[in-house]
Amino acid sequence: MSSSVRTKADQTPKVWFITGTSQGFGQELVRVALNRGDRVIATSRAPQKVIEAFPDASDTLMAVSMDLEDPASVASAVAAAIQRFGRIDVLVNNAGYGMMGAVEEVSEDEVAAVFEVNVFALLRITREVLPHMRKQRSGHIVNLSSIAGLVGTTGFGIYNATKFAVEGLSEALAQELQPLGIGVTVVEPGLFRTDFLGGSLGVAPTKIADYADTVGQRRVWREENNWKQIGDPRLGAEAMVAAIDAPEPPLHLVLGKDSYERAVAKAERIRAEFEAWKDLSFSTDFRGTE
Image: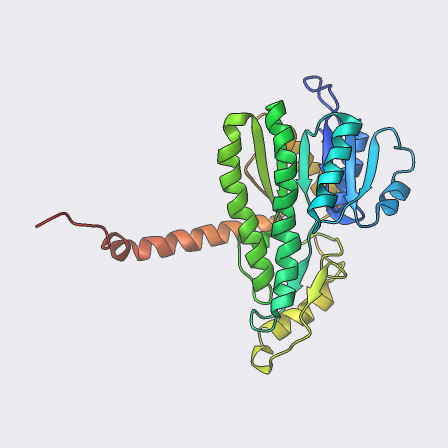
């Protein structure tokens, strides 16, 4: 069954608050939600693009300009959403961007900027929405991570760091919110045909010759694979909605065969490594008093 078809068990329209909706996964999620008859607050730096993409949805779509880095702007957008639709059922933290470059090549300013959007803005928005979900004793938070949040990759070390942070945050948040009737799902897409390898990817201008055979080759790979990725973002959006609609939504949702295979391969490697060093690991426990 397509995730855009609402089941008889859930006839009440949901209210979605989705960030980063002018393109990619964000815009496809807006499309799926609207097709289901749901209500959507779509935030973007360019809300007019969202309005133009969905010209017939004025009654169910509220496109809002929101500065992710400005707490007042975030608070205003959430307040406007509550005033318009009365509640927020699903928060999707989708806004973010990538950063390519060796860990040593990326400047402090570049590191701070990507952490600000990928981690601190996500936290800012979540903390603004949570009081409303706690009052409702219901809701679901979807944090867009990446396979890069599970598996480190040459040339993406700083981006990996931001997405690993989202993973840990989401796991802890899920435990805190479960008793309150609020769910959490962290999504780990593989390579999808979005603008991630294009305008949504920051590339460190600094190049150190010693990394030419590692990070340098990754830079070439990026140019050769932009808009050739295997994943279909529309199908990815439908899969996310299907997971949220499930009776027991997953905490982790890998999207794409490539993401699944890389995640499973890492799990097997790390389990083997843990086992190989188990005796040394156990040797550090107190052995009791003499």
